[in-house]
Image (tube, rainbow, N blue to C red):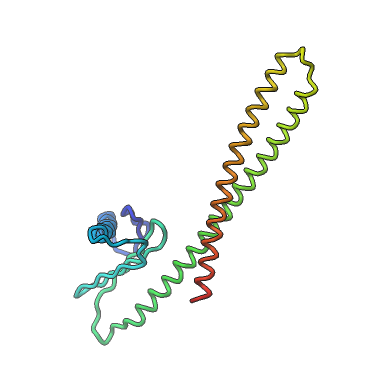
Amino acid sequence: MFYNNGTIFDTTFEQNINIPKLGEHLAELLNQMRKIYETCSYSLEKYSKLIIETEDISVIILKLGEDSNIALFFKKEKEEGLKLKSIKRYITKIEELIDADKFDLLVQEMETKEGILKNLEKTLITKQDQLNMLKNKFETIDETLKHETKEISKDIEDLEHSCTELQMEIEIKEKEVGEIAEKIEGERKKELIE
């Protein structure tokens, strides 16, 4: 398994293989495929799998996540021993696991963003309460205490600015949560269709 930058994070290869170099070459292979598509003016969205077959070895590269991939190497066997259906079944199973992982990752991401959103909302409520207390204090303060009036006025201004920033941040997080919810719903619909 490797990242788009060529870093291999899990392998079953023996130590006699230059693993870092293998990762570099696999990443370069993906980059070259992108360049081929660009040169031909084809749109390359996300690929799902790339299959390279030679006389002795077949390599199947599957997209795992946004930046991660898995490369499966199959040595060619005698024709009678080669069971393409079983290989296809393994690939289908791996793709199902990848899809399940995508769904779980989306749910985790949504839970994280919802937690951040709740914290932002709590902070906003706390700051709004402080702001209301300061405004009440400002209204009841004696005008002869100019120094204290200026200080409270400055604190009110700072809190209002802080509340505005928090509200903007909350809106951004609400939008992000909504987008993730749509993706999750899309994944659920795909599951039902399949």
